[in-house]
Length: 112
Length: 254
Image 1 (tube, one colour):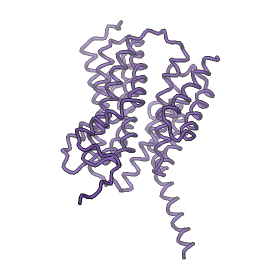
Image 2 (cartoon, each protein chain N blue to C red):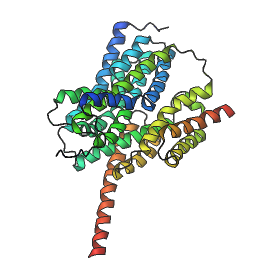
Image 3 (cartoon, one colour):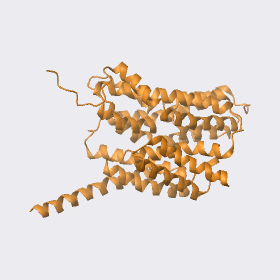
Image 4 (cartoon, rainbow over the protein chains, first blue to last red):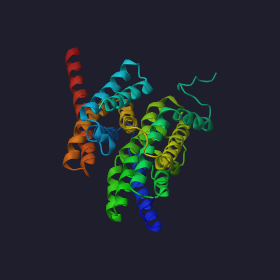
């Protein structure tokens, strides 16, 4: 079941992955202790975080990597729009909105 | 007479806030992460890596996009330097997220190492939820609430990794694709529910357009550039709109 990954090499790569993941988190704590939370700089950090996440989520929907590539772009976008519409129409029901978006996608694939 | 609490959610003590957070995580948040990590576990198996590799990754570096980069690059035998850089670049979003997040859980007198520890669990779901909830919770209970919430959702991710690895590929395709789609849709809905800060909304809109476009140009750096450009633009557009509104108000009254 495994491709002969050397355990020591594997652990080394996992350690690198953990360090590479912790550096931005640790730096974030460091910076947060040095700027005022009501300053323009703080607001800018929030804007960058939102910009990054919006870019990431939009990329996952518009240009997915992996199995979602099999669903058409139109179906993915339509399902996303439906989820947001249901969210506002249902007075912010998260479960209902997520399942209507996901349901539409599955139904679309099932139809072919 | 005791002053009435201005906080609408008071768990009574930090210990109870931990369980309050865990209860909040047990439901849609844990389910979404559980499903997403089933996908990750399946990826680890498809890449012919051992199960301990996937599990250790979820335990030690809980942030899905970086984990996917680690697994894909490790299985094709990429160099250590390439793997380090790829995981780091994928996770740079965590820096501004943590910077903005810590003031929401800060409490006078808490040792700073606790924040450095808690940062291990800052990921989109807990980040969004706690920024929304924390202002309603007494200050000394916020960090416990966050850790309770995150550790439950994290446990769901670890279990999901194991189940995804062992699950046979027998699930019908419409269901599999739907499950993969839950993650981006859930994040989208979290955004829709968290639009109080005007400048963050501008950044959100610009980032959503720039993210996919720049990914086509430079998949490695596209996201980072998107965040900095969309964030900076959102910040200054908001300042400009405020300044204009303030001056038009002034003109009306003056």
